[in-house]
Length: 210
Image 1 (tube, rainbow, N blue to C red):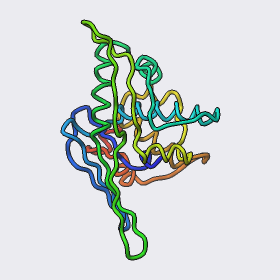
Image 2 (cartoon, rainbow, N blue to C red; image 1 turned 90 degrees about the vertical axis):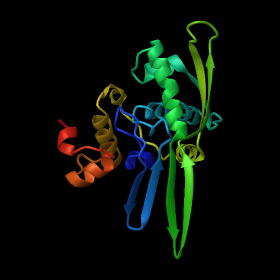
Image 3 (tube, rainbow, N blue to C red; image 1 turned 90 degrees about the horizontal axis):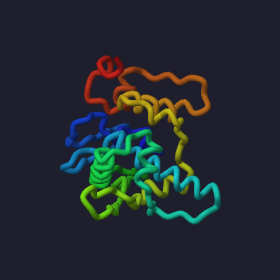
Image 4 (cartoon, one colour; image 1 turned 30 degrees about the vertical axis):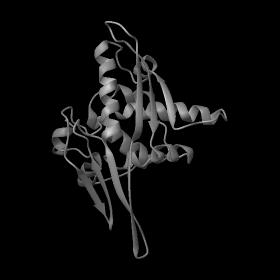
């Protein structure tokens, strides 16, 4: 998907609230976070899980919808996370950031230009168990048309299960870039400056990959 190509997600553990803008040969893309911060590369795990659920249904010739019901515990286990109360709260916060992150981009055709604006998810719903622990039972995510259409068009790439074992954000991002560009090739070459731009890292590359 396009979000493997462009650095839509924050690699920082601190809330990132700056607007990102990337330009290339007259085309541009702008990512605007909410007041709660830009969606992080760990928040993206929720999208990966939703995509995997829809792809499994498509493979079985089942009807699919942009609305995906998620068993919260299954999601946490799938993404190699814990299942403590703190992990469930982090899941709720991730949904907020995903829903709040907005993307604007242009499409040029001849002497005309069209600007589109969309999000990563359009809405989310959470069901909790009533009581002192407030345990999270399930959540439902409505994917944006942009994400859902990419899935329907088979514009997705598989990720190795060990992706979720990568703990450093920069490691995940470099893997995504390599997965996107290598495909079935044995190797792929990229300059350090271009790699830094694609990672979206806010620090020097030499510091990020130590």
